[in-house]
Image 1 (cartoon, rainbow, N blue to C red):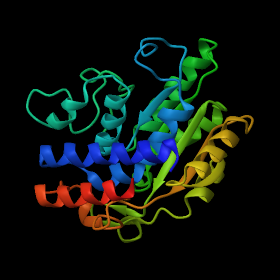
Image 2: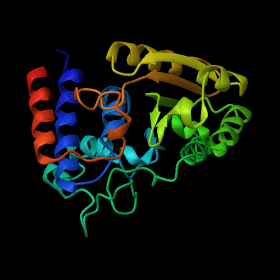
Image 3: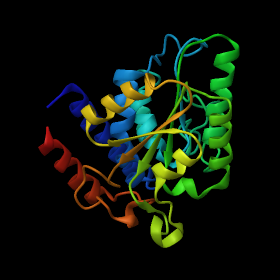
Image 4: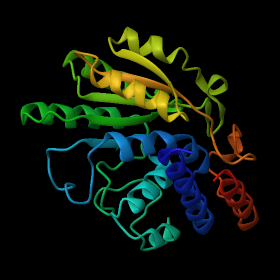
Length: 270
């Protein structure tokens, strides 16, 4: 098992623990996205507690803000706040809101939760870096169901128009959203062809394979002029057998018994 694989398993445990403690939240999309976040925060991006207040660093936008438990698990592990606070997720008075809030939580680059807005924010950050002469990237994670929002495509046009080579987007392509499959609600296929039509460079990756993700990111960083999207094939609830590819686990927290079962499965994977 590689270091990244082991780290992702540890983070999955914290996701389950925090959601079970909260009694609400979104396990499916957090578990489908955690391998992408692990690759970014532990291998690709230069975001640390020490440089957080500096402009000259990478930035990350979690556009699918309901996957906040995944981001919080990473930030706690990176020492932005104590891990024990993960167990206060969504509780009254806790800084760990149901969706990320940059004012309340150290380490969160942008508040998010209203789906469709993240890419616009990422574009603004990328343009600011250009104006300041900063050669760093803005990474953004979108949900596949989120692509049903029109603002995403307005922002896609903007990124292409301004040739924002420092925007690297990921799509968590797990095929499910709160009300069913994407195809049932409003089909978003073919995602790659859609972005290509908006003059983006398009790459594909296995969102649970660290070599695949790393290879795609390396290509994106050296792809030349204009923004790049990496369409990541993922499984909702990845790592927990009874949650995998089950739409019912989009926004339902595990009970104590379910959490114990999930944690037992994850421990067996070590």
